[in-house]
Image (cartoon, rainbow, N blue to C red):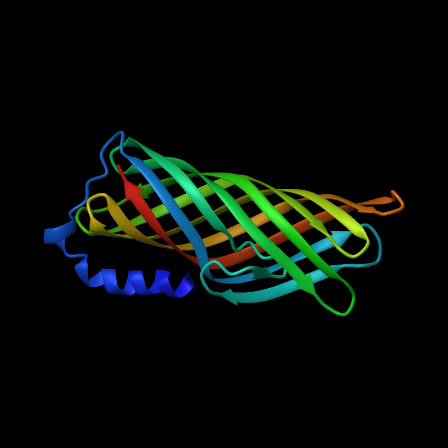
Length: 214
């Protein structure tokens, strides 16, 4: 799947010529899109109440791969609506599988969230740069060998990128994004003991995606 996605991107780029794919984002245009982090650098902490501190830093690369550590790398599906020409307000449903494997303990988290965004697209024609910002919330559900985790994090970010229109209703998207998450939750042991968790992370990443414009 990853190879097929990259092959489609590489083969389609030569078709993105102004005479084939002039694009207009008029008021009322609908956007449907899929995205995945392609490259990212993450740093942060998961801090349980007590002496243990999980300090992480990671670099990840690839389309649709399960992420190592507790990064902000995501796959998402989204929907947007042009409030005025070139100004799109929308939201993403984000998903990820995060895993940490070390000598102390193994842990796995499933992440799902809702992240509204705003985007403004510049210029005309085929190659259209944009700026974007986002803020939302994600829920984390995870476990280790002897404990269950529940976290709620606020997430946000800002960046910019490029829509390459292969046709007036279809684009390949590249987004450079600085993002963050902060929040917390609880860690519950089998004997019904609980302790509080705090979490923060930052990431610099590159996202690749596909959009349909209706």
